[in-house]
Image (cartoon, rainbow, N blue to C red; front, top):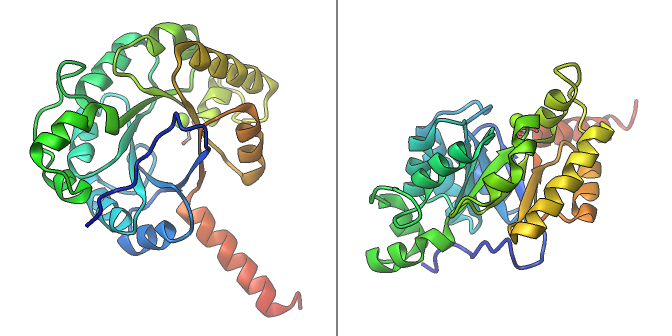
Length: 256
Ligand code: 3PY
Ligand code: MG
């Protein structure tokens, strides 16, 4: 087998991912055939546990796309486990401080950058690499993105980005709206969120690191690519299902 495609966020092209709240292998496999560059499985707000995500990773990877997993802040051991299971990258929620960024890097990167422990059992098969080749390229190949989604994280952005081994930012615009509104609103169209996005993109450019973002709708996604985000996610799988099911029912009824 050829192994997984490279996932190079510095390439200048926009990478599109489908976001999954479930990890049903047949759904992951189907989304892998839809033209997305990657699939993100969500262990923070998703409806799944790590065992189910392992099955989803294998199905999507065999469908030829890179797999990512979002973990909750503090669940750093789970980040390592998902890389061992073949994830190409991990996204950690709520990275508010450089200390959290360092703890995340410790889990996601082998020495000398971090303290990831050896055990990439499934990843060896899915990448088609032997032990030496996997270890030699792992810190470059597996990507660790931390989520900026609070006012505190914005304040600490330069220090977070300066963490060695911390590959870049993934923005949570919904939580950012909640945080910047003092807990009174969750609308990513809030101008305070727009201003924060410009600040994040400028800091990432200064640090030479890429920025990704979760898009609630295709219209938000178009705005984010115009602004310069390198990695944009659409979804969730449940939203894809609902939209498709509603559209097919409306078409079948012929608006009667
Ligand atoms: C956010 O927008 O806050 C997210 O975490 C997206 O999943
Ligand atoms: Mg969030």
